[in-house]
Length: 137
Image (tube, rainbow, N blue to C red; front, side):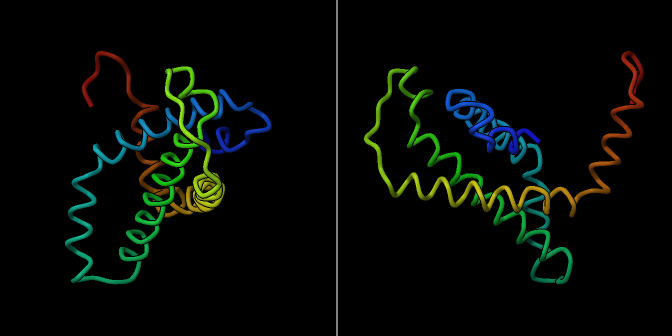
């Protein structure tokens, strides 16, 4: 959802778009850190298994590469966020095209990623909704 909002440049404006993109970069790093053990386990299993696990791994790899390039190229073409931090970079049509292409690809891959992990997402949401402060899980 946050990615879709950040993608809607006409709705958010350039400053919000850029700061949301940087925030999503931080979220991506945290997400990868929290699930790194899954990445390692799944990658090791790929040689022994096929089918759905390989497909999920491939979608996740494509999403990682696409989102990383989208965020990195977005930072490199920043018109507001970096200048506010006192950093100016020369504009490049290569990075602009990279950003546009990977943003669209990421917009396609995010719902596929969520759909493939839907049961896990629902399970976590249910546990979170049932959680009460002061009660152990």
